[in-house]
Length: 465
Image (cartoon, rainbow, N blue to C red; front, side):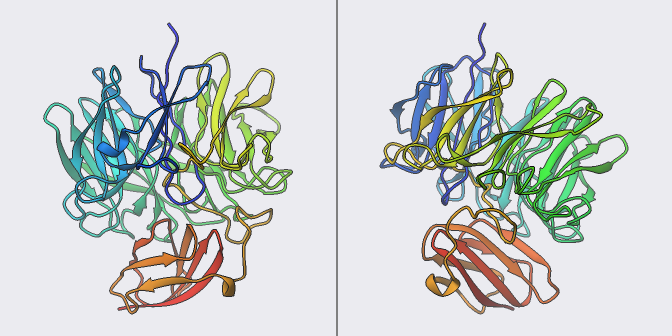
């Protein structure tokens, strides 16, 4: 019996696709929220990747559906939307794989149960577990539990910054009865943490503080299980500040940096998670490579020689600037998406054959019904070598409104162009990175804000009281 997969892609700001698989007997779906007349244009395909417009139904449950995997529980598929719902703060929904009908289950509500859920729902026992990007007691995100039998959602952890991390992205990874995850910010160095959540004790334990050059900084994907170890990547950090690939041993709680990404040789700024195929791990980087538009690579842990091997240099033809995870379908084939390039320069779906090592274009996105598939895990180059994701115009050529200023820590940005990245730097040189126009910072005092948009970069000063 052939496997089928559910693909969900999200358009949030400008460029950034992310795809994950969910085995079910339903047809393939790919959803983009850019293009069309509603929050989500849904495309349907079979395994031969012939995509056609099906309808636009995600809007019924919320906006900006997560491009993570929908979780299958006793024939029922569950997922989250980053926005939409009664409060426009995200929702948890159920999708019937037989008729494609979406039913909203939970509305997220700031301090009550979190804001802007991120990543997939992870099944463990009879419950589902997930995280929100913001909200909770400290507005730094939550870890929650959802019971499909009762339809109830319970907040288990409020992320608080220094002690247990802040602003999680990606998904939780189950190893036995323990859930492992990462946060983008927080921890001792403000560069994110790796943590474990014990179901039985209902306790979160911080295991690793990301520190930059030594072990990476600002992880945006999830941890991938391969054998007895977990593997992951960070978007920045390492000796080149262009990201690292690492392994984590759950038994010893030791994280080992395995590779430093380099724009010239191995690509830079990996966005998303690694995909396990046998003993090998496949992934992509957003930037770097021969054309500066990203690469597809394989990491071979058991090789005695070179372990990280570049396979594909992305260019404008088959797509450029890949983001997110690859999907292993069958017959040694990987599927992925790019955020730009292709016939319309609006992103592509591509196929990579592990056996022939050939990448082929499968689908070009267009303005209707969908374009530039992206997700909430958006980050672009700050100060690394290689071409930029967008032409960077001098700061004087673009503008952004920030209000209120002074602020109590919560403020909004109205950018001139699509927002790509917001970097806050305090007087101590510590940084926080955000991908949203609505921001809550733990910094106090005078803060320097670098706002990167599709029209360029603008620098602002913000007083936080």
